[in-house]
Image 1 (cartoon, one colour):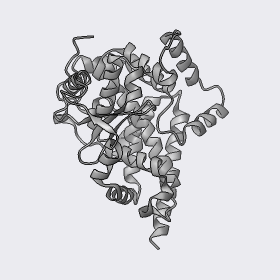
Image 2 (cartoon, rainbow, N blue to C red; image 1 turned 135 degrees about the vertical axis):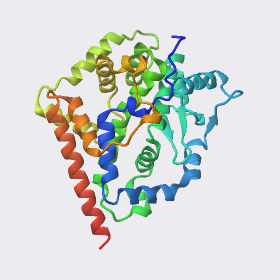
Image 3 (tube, helix red, strand yellow; image 1 turned 45 degrees about the vertical axis):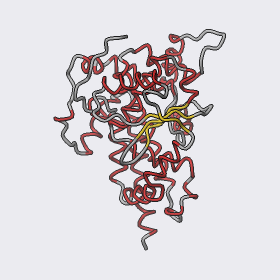
Image 4 (cartoon, one colour; image 1 turned 180 degrees about the vertical axis):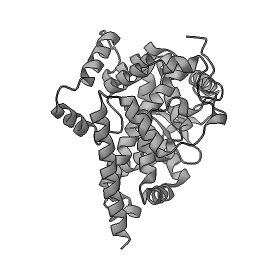
Length: 325
């Protein structure tokens, strides 16, 4: 698809998933949360983050992977982001990409990710990661990655704190932030088939010498969404509690719903919130949007999520108070 619409001055609020905003604002409202963020960020530091993610990586530019550099420039232009974050490629067999950093975020994509994806699928991933930066996700996502990498017990600056509720709540938001950036990725590539095919490859790998079928994958995604019993819901929560990404089948189904509701086409038609007209919103409005989004069919699921976040917040607050006695 050669002629992509440039989304001039688009605000990330135009595509952000309501559950992402509600979960992040819940985290920000936890007493002591900012203190933990400052301590972890201060412990690692901006230089530490860059060394952690770029010590074994190559910076992309006009003379270093110029085709990928051109593709990335197109993504930045389509989403009309005024600053071009640095892009790195790291040699690893893991299929992954990250948008990380505090004051000066950057993107790292794995060599294996580039290998299994074609050019347009790479465009989708680059737009997805840029969307994280545009949404201001990177500080909290970097904290989450550091916690996952080092483990809570290996961070002396938070030693002695009962931080499991904090970790669970942070990962819950981390997963919800992926749903937002999946939408940003679609807006960056403006090709629904490419987006869904990317999820298919992320879930099951490349074709190799066999065949893969996108329609069958979407049927599978729909089947996972069907909630047959309360026990199924419990199992899904347990399966995802310590994951940093939602299941790819769920992400495909969630993105498809967003398209079907017409919000994606409205944005392409030019009807979207712009950065120069993006007011702050109270937390209660984000909760209301999230509840409205999930609707009656998933009302119980949202209430479960909201209750989980609330209990995590209460436990985290109690832990913070206990450490200050």
